[in-house]
Image (cartoon, rainbow, N blue to C red; front, side):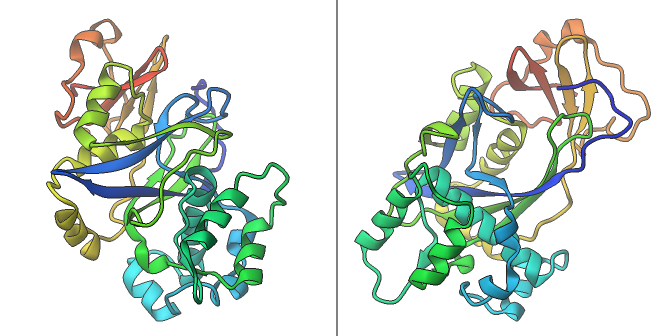
Length: 302
């Protein structure tokens, strides 16, 4: 958190991938814990993701290494708000970051085997990888990225008053059955599969501290009883209205107002800081406000 600034940092383009799977009678989502020394959301559980690298914008190269043509990209993944170049760039970044942080590779090539995927997963762990390693991998080994496996979920912009800001596309994909998730032990130190309800409960008690977008996303996913139900939503979902939280600084911590909060557009918002502990909501209860206090983000009454 930082004090109010008249010149907030410009949000950097970023991409995140929500991995979902069916586990017995419930949906589970994969979460990664950010390293305690991370510059953003340190110690919090998030989805695999990060900022777009310059190589992710190499449209002339990547258009030959994705499994959707320009028309299909715009119809299926653009939602009228993104160009084919932007879709590919955000999609490439989501797939690259998911490979780097979670060891899962949404790609295919001629006569590929499980060993090929395992070799790529091991490669991402090398400490001496050059910045261009991912685009070089796709070109030299003939990999085609599976943008067809990704679906739009939401579009977030970090609040103005936060020190680091991102303009992030949240994609959603079903976990490949022939792969497994493994944290990179560098940017992320722990990974877990968890149901949305368990994730929200773990956040409330501090055992699974969540970032605000992760909290909201798990809350959104509560309504889906099976992966098949979620797939039906994925097939027709667009990016929707941008989620741009508003931060209200406090002497200790802050309160984040989501765009659906009744006071979101009011010039001045009064917060009873002394009563916030009593305003905490049970896990799973709908919320429009998030209280940041002593390193935790938790839902409170509006």
